[in-house]
Image 1 (spheres, helix red, strand yellow):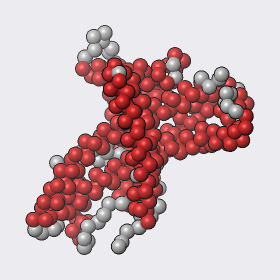
Image 2: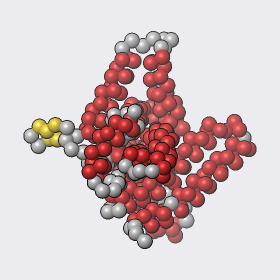
Image 3: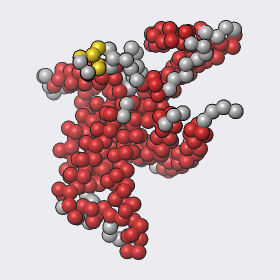
Length: 271
Length: 69
């Protein structure tokens, strides 16, 4: 169902060119759905708006009347929230981490929905494959863990504990200190961003390749080879869709887990 | 032979994470084999390690396509 919708929308472009239009980074740019002055509303923005409305609406509907014995929707929402509050936070931050649960739970649910919108039919675009959302979420996590660390250990103490950890022979301080500073303050937001963005980018690209390539092989190429290769490609695309769903949830979990680990590291780094 | 150096780069970039992820899950399997009750505790650590090791390869794929592949 989703494949024919996708195939129909690009059938025109595929059949008017010679050969196969291989998917690439250009497929992540979209024409605007409508424009207001200089502001263009594109498909990624639509995905973000719908996802945010979905999460907000879901939790609002659940929290309107809390029942002591939860119904199915409340149980599902509570399980998700429990996953962050009792699964991620105690192991990484400890007792004082509970004041970060609102941020981490929001992060987890937002990223999960933004990622999974890559395999939802009709939408089929992971909003986190454009670098903006992961970049700013990584910046927020970075600001939070640095601010918490500086507030807990003082400005000098935070960097001293980070760059000159005790119990290390003093001779390797000149090697260790810049490396630690670089790794903690500079590299962390980059890897947080790029890990999420590139995972979603590569996954979406692979899905485009198998499904559009399968459609091209099935309908454009004549003969048994086209039919066999095309149907194998589309079947593989279906398998990859489920695999991609798993990876999307995993990446949301890893982003949240790493943010919690960084916050925990900044809080408990005093010796 | 056609293609670009970017794709060769992707192939080379897959070596390290391949070895790393293999080691991580070998340790996870060993740990669960020795003590099956530790499965859920080790699973979180294994998933975290997998994501960290995979990140390098995925960043390579993204850059190979984004920087003109």
